Image (cartoon, rainbow, N blue to C red; front, side, top):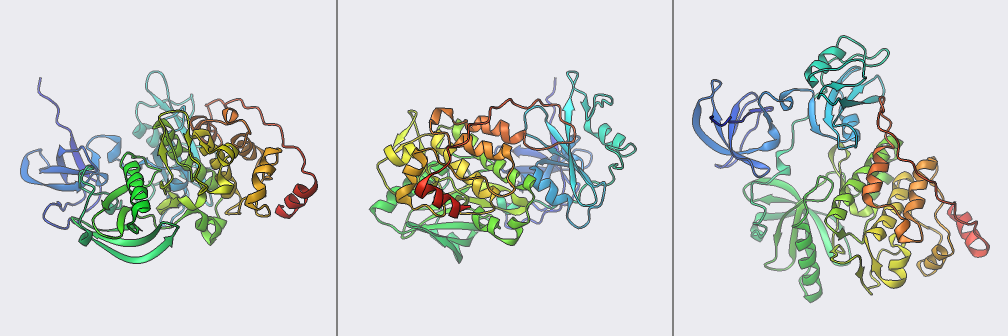
Length: 479
């Protein structure tokens, strides 16, 4: 029996640059020669399937599997709720504009997002034991196309029918590199620093260009060369090379020859999450969008948890945000892979107000100390960038926490979300949730129009004792 050859169709025009890249038009067809990386080597084929002999690199995110759901204009693949809302609310979309996206939530594989006049509704697309798709048990469909066709003629909810697919943004080919993942070291001459974005104790971060096989905008962290920084550079790059996740910052290249060292990563257009939350756009985010941001951070940290990695510096300033509010955990200078249950460090160079009490007092860092930090980060998100414990100096914080005091809930923060923070701030690390459990909790905070996934039963933690004396004054100031 002859092997079926999978073919792909171009979903957008693409203009290649350089001899290795292949230009193409929407509707062109290809056969993959090497599809193991994010830039594929393909061979162009004709409409009747004949080979042309013309080969080259193409960005894989410009192609869809011929004859599959990927070919449909309403299918958007991996997309968060916030990304879906931002796309559907853009100019060019109207009431009834819609898209289907892949969901990583427990209990359903796809979600349907539909624009109303001033909001977006989300529907779970369930699948029966026989493989049929449905929004409601009363109407079952053999495939997604039939489901879409039905709700173009029948309302998906009162007064709302599907009209036209959401206007699709052309993907950004510059997000990907055809370089093999093991060829990290690049010549310094390939990089151009353009403007400084920020600085820390050991490094500066610049926006720049990588002018190797592609001319692409990148972020370049420069680390001055000395014995201490050489170790920081070695540990951070070794750590980044092991990571590959949608919500973690991607490493592109390094330059360890010459001074300073370069760590080259993807560039996220909106900068760090803390500045974003305090800015005009962040101040206008809905609660649902804020929870989506928090959920993306949990997804990235859950991946680290599965890799037995601890971050040790999880905070809004170390999360980056890009187009359509995609969030990525960054700054892995303090991160460690742990072979045992914990990592012990006597260093006092820690983010004090984000660090768990057992790490402050005994230097014991675990996945659960990262969970504590996430609780503080969640407070930053829901307060839109408020400083934690603003009236309490570092020297008094540990005692404040040891007697049971915690930050009060941010203004307009629901009890459910505040209870998540309190669970993350449990005095006993073993009583804090794992990131896997947090992922379940955050997934089920989202309100879908059709909910068939049972809520996970939780017990609200006991509220902390009321503060007295000096701490009462400090907390009054805090409020």
